[in-house]
Image 1 (cartoon, one colour):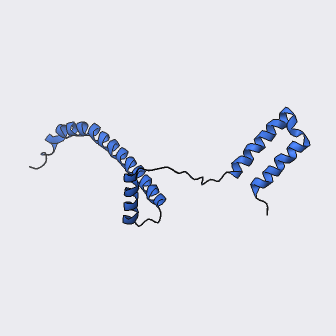
Image 2 (cartoon, one colour):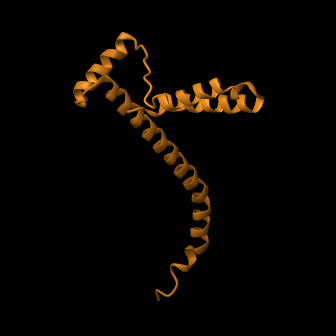
Image 3 (cartoon, one colour):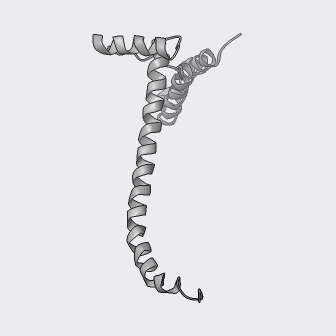
Length: 123
């Protein structure tokens, strides 16, 4: 069974052999097909590696046991998600804090203006 990347490579090779890529328009089509082949050939879960200092590796291993994660990568992923959620929460708190400060002054002025009405009709 042929996969999609192999099929695209064969299509590109047939374009080359037909001479279609020697013409300017054919060359553009050939390059477009090459880019498509490359995009289909690349894995979406490309690996990325990085080196941590010894102190941070110890922290990752300690957290791995504490949160019962299977791998160090899972610890890093969960940590990144938690950091993202925390920073979003902090941004929301700051927005509420500034909105509250902005309305607090207006609210206290309104309350002072209407305070004399609270004693009416109690007689």
